[in-house]
Length: 216
Image (cartoon, rainbow, N blue to C red; front, top):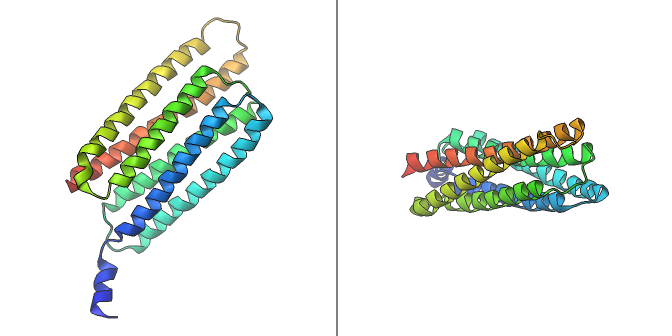
């Protein structure tokens, strides 16, 4: 093997990880937009069709995650800490898994309603995923640190909005209003899943923050 080929093999494969994570966040963003459609939909049969489409995107996300892990296992030197890259890929996968699970709940529980809180959660998640997509595109140049910090703060603000929305919804669900107990439990499961998805978005920013600290 020639010396320049050896050196190239040992150099960080930044482009490889950049392309994979960009692909991952584009898929996540498309999934969040599709989930917003599911949330706005008021016909169960139409929801079923859209959920099948979301399952396809979730499967695509799983494949990308495996590609990131394979790249980590086969690359000698990585552009960032190996565990941070693994955590970023895992958090992105967790966000999408949570969204897809909630969409499945809507179908399995035969919930055709489109309450305002569901649409609000979907909008918050879509905005968070847009910020995540932007943050990930900036991650490869530490000159973008200020813009990245702004994105981290924005996601934190959105996560606080999600917390407040969840508390409001939970209080309303368990208020004495004649709602059937089974319906209460079904919607609680839905909103808990959405809260979990938002929490995973927050977890993602913690890892990005670690990368900034280590590489600034």
